Image 1 (cartoon, rainbow, N blue to C red):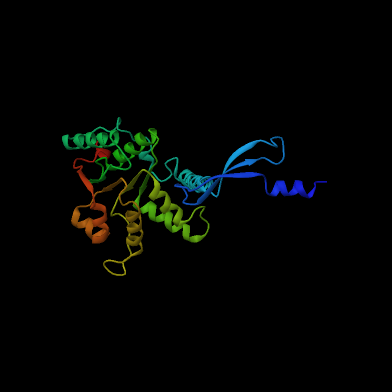
Image 2: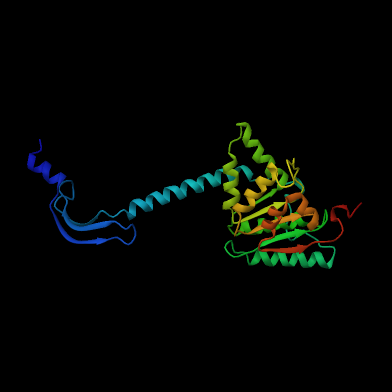
Length: 270
């Protein structure tokens, strides 16, 4: 049985105050003490302890939060992997197998390859690929995501209709993820490709108010300052009518327009 004196030495081990200071990391008042370990295999050993500092606690909390967020992102990303949100025709799309039939499309391909080579998630601008059906806007956008994912970047390719469908599916309660999960994934990827902008169905209450417009705005707002690639086959006036002025303004903020006019290469053998 331990004596009262031994119990007291465990609760209040022998110590000597060396200094008191304010920690620059956590802002707490810290006592730096020389202490004698009262029990165990290291009993009697003198150690230096900083009492009151919370830096290590804060680091562990931040690490746990970061790990939880990464695990959650990986879980959602997995649901979108395997090109589950991509048409079959795009699954094998690469820069190499895109054959540009015109000089303008060759230049567009070269510019997108340059964009991919110099990509920086903190500095690269947005791109808007504009042109009629079948000129390779989606093909080249997928090619960019494949190249960047091969370099370790997180990328996500979604068409606007499928994105809205995925969000709606979360409302029935049977989805494995929530609307917030989807929007968080969209927000956190290094590059987001939003394909077929303007093809979404809108059930307008008035000219500037619809569920689709609201969701698109949330997506655009979450990507503010982060590289996003948009594709559309609509002209500016048509896109303005489909998106509304507020959303189009967000799309065009800091965005480079790349025109992709040319023949429909999907019909080249027709």
